[in-house]
Image (tube, rainbow, N blue to C red; front, side, top):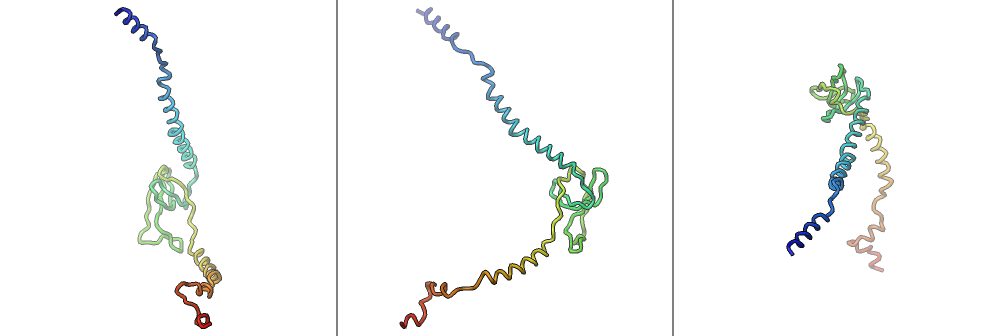
Amino acid sequence: MTHTLALLHLLAATAAKKSNPLITFLPLILIAVAGYFFFIKPQQRKAQAARATANTDIEVGDDVQTIGGVIGTVLEIHGDRYTLLTGALGADGNLDGPQPTRIVFVRQAIARKIERLVDVEDDVDAGAASHGDRAEIDDPGPSKAAHDEHPDHEGDGEAEQA
């Protein structure tokens, strides 16, 4: 009887299916492929777009923004070194303040070329005049009907006498 149990045990061990190593590593392979498409491929697209915009021509007088967020006007270009002038522009186009700042950056530190800001003071003055006229037309003031419907208003003296 012991030989029969040993034989059954041996048959049960050999009858078990052996798993395919490809199926064992399939989840790991799927995770690696998904990671490539979710992390590496978008980063490559972003780097390619950055290289394409890096080839834009920046000339003296252009407004640029650096990778650190500094915004300035290009004063000089010497090879890959760009001298920027930073500060607030006055009404006459010159920098206001006690001392304008000149900072030298390498080309790789300049993130992008930005558009010049439009002076909004003229637009605000023109807009205020047109909005002021319209405000008088749109707001006729309180009406008598609204005054009569107010809960604290007890009505006219004539209505109470009648």
